[in-house]
Length: 273
Image (cartoon, rainbow, N blue to C red; front, top):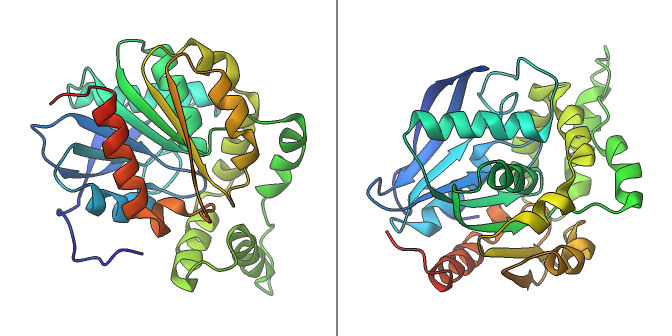
């Protein structure tokens, strides 16, 4: 992972939305094009700190915590990708952002597509890491991947969450697995609710309707890598890439690589400040 001292200063703040307070990280240059970074579950915007430092001052970087995750208040309605996207749109409205670049990883890719679909004038271009065009097989097994661990006197629920996070990427630094374990424990029912929301989203139908340039990519070790070709085929103006060896925590462990891909893609898409 990138060193903490490198790159632009990352600041944290809150804004008011209908669900309550939404926490976000920001960095870069507010005079530049906004780039909104949408995280996976059960993580938070902390997963983008290395990437934000790698991207530097080329954009106004905004990484919100999805409601119910990180330090954001939970939704006041049943969880759905549409509800998450409305919350992010309210966040952008609070910052008076009319157009932006979008980048989402896993659940964040679902939210990015919903956001662009529901707000056709918002996205100048969009990048999706591990697009969630789920096969029937993935839809069947996904709920088990986020099944809550009942609290137990012997603390076995702690070990259960730890092992789940280690299984996602067994070679990940222990500190990264610990971070994700603590986040997974903290969010409670929001974790399985987010996965169910991903399952229920008409992702392919929405992706097919997107008119802005879209980059889809995934690490070759990502559990969603097998869906990459099918997602690419749905794009009107699309590109497809693969990152050799990257897995679930690509944004932490391949930050420089992903930053370079995003910068090059957004430049090809004709994005101007």
